[in-house]
Image (cartoon, rainbow, N blue to C red):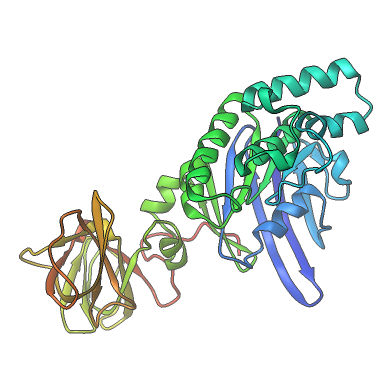
Length: 367
């Protein structure tokens, strides 16, 4: 096992900057998940750690060793790809043992390592099968097993579940979480799926346009997003956003006038913001309720998504940047076109300034 330290990492392809001054520390044994939208640089960042892409500037350390200019084979890493990358003519056993065979390990060492990994991953009865005889989940476990037998200092996962169907993704998430608990090895995991990030990570790294927007535990990012981008990216469905202007700002409370003229009391002091300062109010779907005596917004039902235990109701209002999403009970009775008065819970409202930053804290990003 080993820690990972990144300092001032820059990477460009031609004139296009992909990574812009990344600083990151991952502790020994930590499960760190890098998330962000397509094109944000997360896979490129992983490939620079692996040594598959050369950095233009900066330092990469694994443990106490500077690996910035070392080849992938010298870094003590093992990588699991989205595409499995299994040899179709080899059995599961041969695929898992290939790296050790090339490295010149003895037959006894190889057999012991492969069978231990197979036992951990539930692949023992599949060792003589070839990839075409395996399900998607079994192929992915074989790819993970191939990484395990190398006994790396750090595991790198590049969107390993994106080729699987929904039920297999859930199962493999459990497998990977259990694997981390068993091996106690440092894992760097890249995904665009924030649900994977929330369920797997000890710490999440949110990336956008080659910069780190915020790092923290899943709970910290959900409850205390540093900016509007993180607030909208972490959480499913996404946070609701409503535009408005400051009426009065105190240390502990702020009154906001929405586009429709409705005033909302927010238990989030933003300092002494001048009157009429433009702000964005954010609130998550589960923190909306029906009716009340204050903080009320008039809406019209646009769509109801019944999901059994609960429903997601999409509401039209001139105050929201998009449709307002409300998490309702499973037996929600209204239909498209019906009117609904929604209450915004003042204890769960966020305020974002014109620059997108959450007004109660400073960003923990690196750019």
